[in-house]
Image 1 (cartoon, helix red, strand yellow):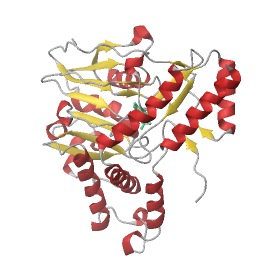
Image 2: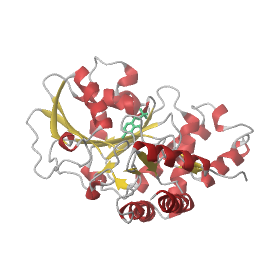
Image 3: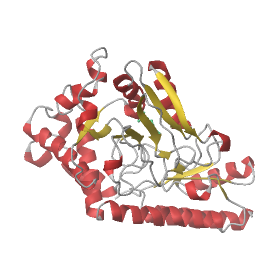
Image 4: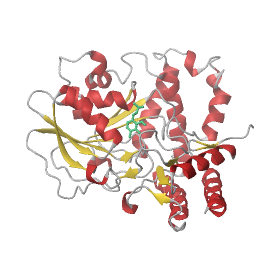
Length: 362
Ligand code: PMP
């Protein structure tokens, strides 16, 4: 086997080695069919069973919540920013949003193109380094849904809890932390994610929603942007991203093999905890960007005393084989993305490197 990189990319991101190896073994001859999954008709029984298995696995990992459906779409989570208001903001209704930073803002600006929006809570005052308190959140009468971003990939914040929105549907962008912990799906009416962080490769978008959210799309929007098109055709209205769905299914098997979401959460807590520990023990050499209680277990964002030292850190880290440690261009600083598939060895190598770098430059 070739040497695997210490991959801390924010997405597309590290996939489990076991999944890649299984895909490699099955690539040219999937289960005796004489062809790859990529070469098969999406209308055939072989592909359809993979497709259905992936949907069942997802629901099973989420505890088989009653009345929920899984859709496989394309266009990334960014297309959901548009599809959600197109499908739900029919005349007179408002989309309510929690503004937590970069990705929430993108969702809001797309919704504004389509209809009325309202900012129910915002972390703007803290430059999004702290999550807004949602305990007393007020939802106005004509609200179609409340939209949240569970994990802000760029700032490095993550909600630990979700509000009770009573009769108002709660829709959550979980692109960067889906399946990183157990979830009580009954709290959510719809969750969605681009697959390229915790679920598989780019090109597949997963939507999991209560069936009633997906049945009555307004007749004024084109077929490919309507949820009812995908629900009515089991996400096989047109050609699905078939190889991506196959890989998602393999990643889901891998999560099952890890022991399910409770085990995955423990592993994630440990990985994130060990990096935050180095930051907190560094006597200010490293500074976490985010309020301690709102820190993400998926994207650890931190800074050094100045940009010169940060540049040096990135340069040295690249020399040592670390990939993707540079913070997002919009906020600068440093970021280690440690999704489910990032192994302990990568995290251990990073914490050792951070300690060593402090020793030399501190
Ligand atoms: N939401 C969040 C939280 C994200 O992290 C991203 C991608 N980094 C997106 C939405 C956009 O996803 P996509 O590139 O799949 O459109």
